[in-house]
Image 1 (cartoon, rainbow, N blue to C red):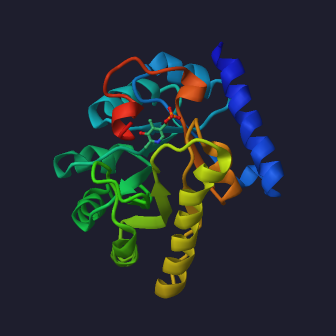
Image 2 (image 1 turned 180 degrees about the vertical axis):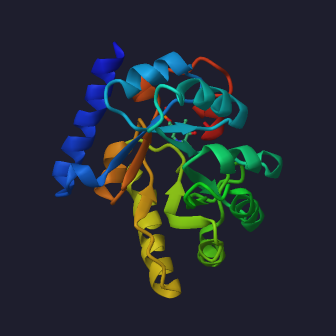
Length: 240
Ligand SMILES: *Cc1c(COP(=O)(O)O)cnc(C)c1O
């Protein structure tokens, strides 16, 4: 499918799901996940009006951002992959958002390394909603404590929670982990007095379920760009 058709189809899916949920489609941000796709493909999607792009691998992203920034200075870059402490400096300098905070140490480094001329880094705490051993994310029982500590860091702005549930078939089954993330967000917001407006949840296979449960940001890769061929694509990332 040509990119403009696949992109329009994803926008349509979001609009329909929002309508079904009784929500304003404008309240849902589409994050185009461009990992493994090159700068020319990102530029093609940016030319359709897309502003937010998600990347998982630091070096790949840094190269792509450098190639695109001169012509596309207003794109917003979101880091959504596992983050090691030796890679935090590049992420703090190059990205607008990080969705995958699951340890205080990483958050402290990002805050310390955020360049002074940039606004605070927008971050989400990633929660391992299904308790999968192979998955990144803080266990739900520890998410409140981590969120409260992250919220106190001066150069980060905590926006909410993110999750990557285990794959499930069918809308009802897909909704269940997203509902749990929403309830956890509500509980943490109340217990710690935090505003946590962002629920970063839903991908190509389950964005409708996520929107029905309150997602404010869906992360969509293959439904826009097509299947990824490189072995370190989403399959591995999402533990599939
Ligand atoms: C790859 C990836 C996505 C997009 O997955 P698709 O199934 O291609 O839509 C979303 N979120 C994260 C964290 C990813 O790694």
